[in-house]
Image (cartoon, rainbow, N blue to C red; front, side, top):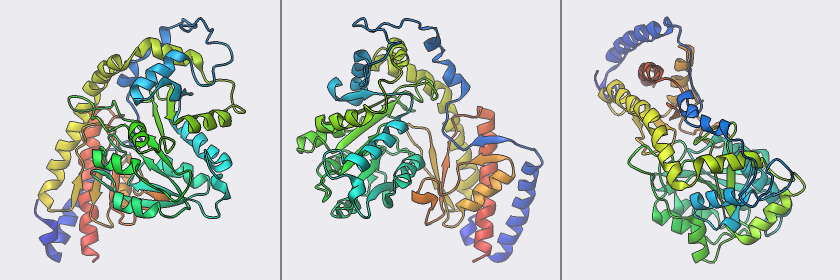
Length: 421
């Protein structure tokens, strides 16, 4: 391989012909691999099969979890999630299996009731800040509720805080999405300075909210989880304890389809959220809450459980890193990618204008990746350069095959792009 950016037209034409032959050989294999979502594999799910044999239905205070009641969650579940989130149990609400569902409800409550201020829907043109690349489902929630999505550049330290501090001067800006630990998709962790600057914000909106989705806080690939500053505590120090709402779940700890989610918030926000949930439900699945407490026990046991997850998925991340290096580094500065210490993704950046074509080539050869641009508001990457890679679900041999094809597809897309200039 040689530096594509230094090649003349004749060299690029010759390289395209060679890559096309290689690509057609992959097409002939009839691959059918799906790497479009960050899902746990079956081996990871098997780690939690012990949940299915837990049949005790009585909580520590004698309540029958099979019956109605306990909107905020059973006490032992609230304590477990309080330990994970670094919050007081009185600030914690334990819900159903989906933290995204809780986020949807929080945004809905803000639109209807204001969460401590004027209802967001009373604003003629409400807006929400979206660090990008970020989690596409976050963006879809606020898009669904009619917010204008404002992209904020994502740096290795977290959102570009100079940009955030300027944007929140607009009273139409009602909040910001945050994935502070092993962000989706880059795998970055917010720096202490970023967390402190977020906590010290003085937004023009009276009820601005920081939606703090700590989905990956225990999903480490290194020696242990990265410790990100606690946004609840930092906001309280700044006299803004009502600004953040924290979320987490067991979705990628136990069963994504049958886990438990939780949120934590300041006292007034917490009260407003429980009022908003009261007409919707008499209580979430307390039997599932109870069996998760009995299975997971506490944070120490959760971290020991996550070591088993790491043993399954880290070799897949390592293989993808190795093969990306072998397949792309000799071609010049045509791509870069993150090397996260945790989370579920690797973020790949192509030359501007090459991501969509790369994803399309992979799909046409039987490997489905997350759509290019999915990690940006409205699904539009203005540079057409980011691809979210999710190596956890396929078998390792499939991850390796898919990564080799990806390298060929990216190189072919790059050569086509350079020839078209």
